[in-house]
Length: 133
Image (cartoon, rainbow, N blue to C red; front, side, top):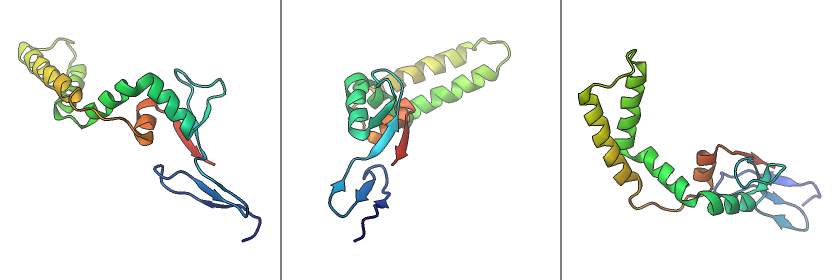
């Protein structure tokens, strides 16, 4: 094997693997995140980014990801979009009742059986930008 670095880009579950003649470096995915709990530079390794996210957003992320899959939450978004297109800015009583019912179902759905977020879900939740080195 020559002294030139060879890079194998895997999906985000298996971060970039950089192989050299003498050693192997894992976990070299850089993440640009400047939100709550971030370092001043905004650059993080995957491990640092996951520590910040687990510390600050463990519950919020799992609820958000669950709401993306919940049918009731999708219906709420649809009702809200049609309401915003309405020029009077008032919901009819029928729409209000439907909205309230879907809101209750959505709250039950997204808070039920939440699981810990993984790296891809945290990136989706926070809007961070992963960059492969």
